[in-house]
Length: 306
Image (cartoon, rainbow, N blue to C red; front, side):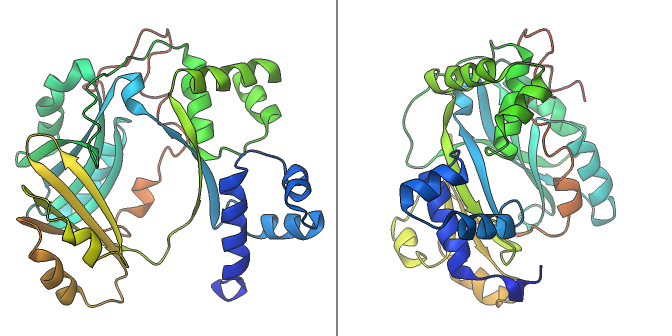
């Protein structure tokens, strides 16, 4: 399906409905909203899994994971080779090519709370020039209470499935887990009761934003949120360092202008190229958590194992 066959109104409607009823059947949604079931099915089949996705949202704090952002200097000619090696390690959950205050790679790393002191040893495998910071959501909750992974291994597989596609049929999940459907329902409820599974979000695949400007600042100037409200902008709290700002845009826009605009708000600035390592980024898409945890249910594997 080419972009010309895409009807923005249909996509908008689908996202709105799926945010309201993320895991309900189409029949149920049509009933509740008084919609034509066949028309809804047609729209769903046209866009779901191609442009529109429903994913589970997790509180990784509850399972004892801390989130870090890392910047590594990597020579241009070794970029792909280093990115591939990093991607073998499931604790690197996102990898992006970046040029700016570090030329090479920026990565999001989930680190089990008891393994934080191993982070330098991990980084040294890929670069001798790096920096990293623990990153928290903005505004900060001030909650320093990290749980641990104390669930059977099957839960990691279940969480991977729901993260990838929360609308995966129960029968399919049950088959993959070798469990009955009532057991799968019970497992999902367990994740909800423990506050691990926060809910579901419907999103539109963002194909036009293939660039990002990322910056670090010790002071957050609140007017930045107001000034750039028409952009997609992300703010994170860097523990002990300040704030992380990220603006998303298209390579068709004027890059110099963007850098000039944003540089007044940050002390360090870099450009992210989301398309450069896209094929590597997408490796192991459904196997994030199941590669992190031990099969015997005894917590996490070592981040040095990979």
